[in-house]
Image (cartoon, rainbow, N blue to C red):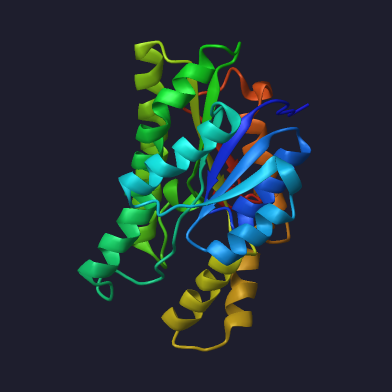
Length: 264
């Protein structure tokens, strides 16, 4: 189940957190994985820990040139690309009135432009590999529960992740219409215990006029009926599933992995 034997994957923002854990699970599942990030030292360390089945490449997801270089390096090294995971993202943690135009521009550049560019630049390689596979190639976009329901803490983040959610569906339909065997699905995490997750606790505390981050964490915990916050492995497992042939009849779908948060 969920095997990726012989597949080649590129994961943006994979130096740490969900991306790094996804890379680890994909290597375990038989894939060769390109870890792409702007955190060069951390990214190289993550790749070294995965052995010969992984490589690191610097990637600024807001740059078309950087995407082109990363994809060219991966296809030159391993002969193709079967899986793209648009994982890189950022959390702002500011309300509409507090956020500046420059902060919005940066948020949108990473969370929206990065997904557009990664998808656009990967199409030729994914189209070629997909044509050779029964279930095609795969794109997995990291959205969020904030792309399904509104975020009190960061409406601008919610705006970007809502865009990722609908871009996933629209690109899946476009590729199907054109006859490209490229499946596109999104995954929607709840609050995950990563650096970004910690930022949400800080933002919640700040919005309440407090510096009590632990109290904010406990509030977040109570919104998850399952009784705990998520960890990177919870989301990485879902990404590996969506990338695998076991999800071969899924495209334009959103996999919600949120501990019951949006069930309420």
